[in-house]
Image (cartoon, rainbow, N blue to C red):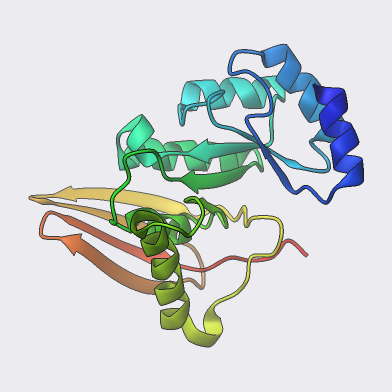
Length: 204
């Protein structure tokens, strides 16, 4: 399988390979990363399940170079942020993703920008629950105006510093990094996200 992927990577302009091997094939993932980790972003979804213990094992064993991030898989913002921070600490990429059963709530688009991942996986733009995420990204770009920056082919792995504060009936997430501009987006009476945002910084 690794040889086949390597052959495809020589023939075609691949950038990302997600879940290239089975979720418990750690030896296979290490081989895949040795062969293609310098050319492609190798994203572990089922391998890591947004779990910091499994991500740490992947870092320790050099089994990948990116992780898929699913907020409603791990269950809390705190754990989601910890997973992204851990990926960044190893200079890995992170890709925020939707899951089956999505609604038109566009929060993961805001989260993608707030965390500076440069990636959002939300499916083909063919249904309302998917389109709304893309629409929200365009709203954010419109809000930022000329300060919006295309992240480039490789995601920004800047290391924002996160602080999460829980208030009565509200969860407030603040993301701070030098030079980022402020934004405050409230989704409902009982969920508010406040952060400093930047579309991304290219690795030149």
